[in-house]
Image (cartoon, rainbow, N blue to C red; front, side, top):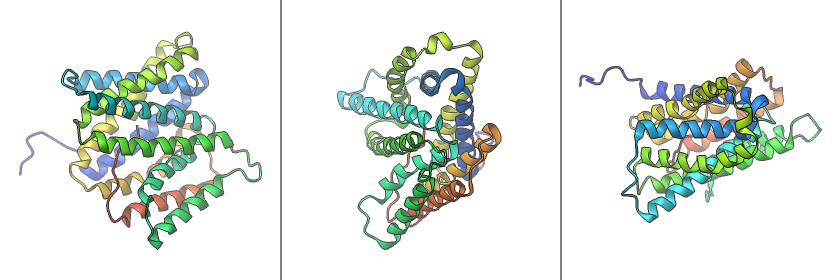
Length: 290
């Protein structure tokens, strides 16, 4: 059938572009940390992302039920917490390690309740990856950053669960847009108290808009279109490449060099995540990292 809507990016390249966009945005964000700090940078990203989504989606909120309001509020609060905690983590540890450790949350969710031997293999691989990263011998890795990344992963797992539930009671784009507004309500007061207004410069707004586009608007659009064309399992396997792309982004944009053990840890977590998805009896709910 002829495509009357013009050129469209095929599904697999769209997901890969989405991953590159998200990790490039994370690298830009980390570059702003020395001036604004992790909390204020996260708030700038979330606030501007909410503004962009509101302008483009213009959700009708008049007909939302009390159940929908409660669901989207909890979804947004979780989204805000996940983003702030992740930025606090990568302020302390390399971007690639932060992303890899955050993936433990969705991985644990995918393996919850499983008793199959193959799934224990993925658990062991992920555990070995974490053990390789852990600062057993004072290798200079910040333990607080490691724990924050794991906590962000726990919020990501909660975000996936909440996203799966909310998708059954309201439109996805509306949920993401309103959820991002609630996320802003959580993080902006913290950032203002942390001196966001006094430290904010005009050039930072431009960086903030680039960050919002790369980390939210562009990947959300690409992923939503891709999910209509490929199975959720295929999408999840492709998303498992994110720590590797984060490692490349960290190297190119931030000059973050990983040790051999850290590269091995990232590789093991990628294999565990992709393997768990590939061998899953039923694909776990999929939600993009925001």
